[in-house]
Length: 138
Image 1 (cartoon, helix red, strand yellow):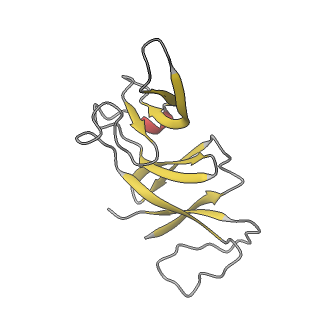
Image 2: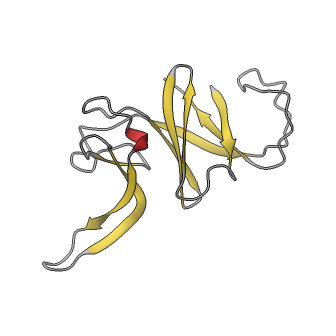
């Protein structure tokens, strides 16, 4: 099911927007112009994960050398600091076993008429810019 969650202009690079869709809290993130969505619940103890800080991480490197990368792609839980990759929901510390639900996000033209598609929730408004659409499949 598709849900309009905002416009590209509303969620600028490095920003996020938290929405409630069908009883599910979801964080929408703009990382360098690419949009990602994660369920707003940390699998550790249920914290509002998407309120955490967005950081980068160090990459494997030689002793005494620190290579910083992936700036804005690592979400840190506000309660206990567990870190997750915003691009896929996998944890940094154990990506094969611990993850948070990730959802597909697309950017679609805002000027189209979706009245004929019952899968798209619409309201009587005029949109003059591209919109961010969350694909919520549970």
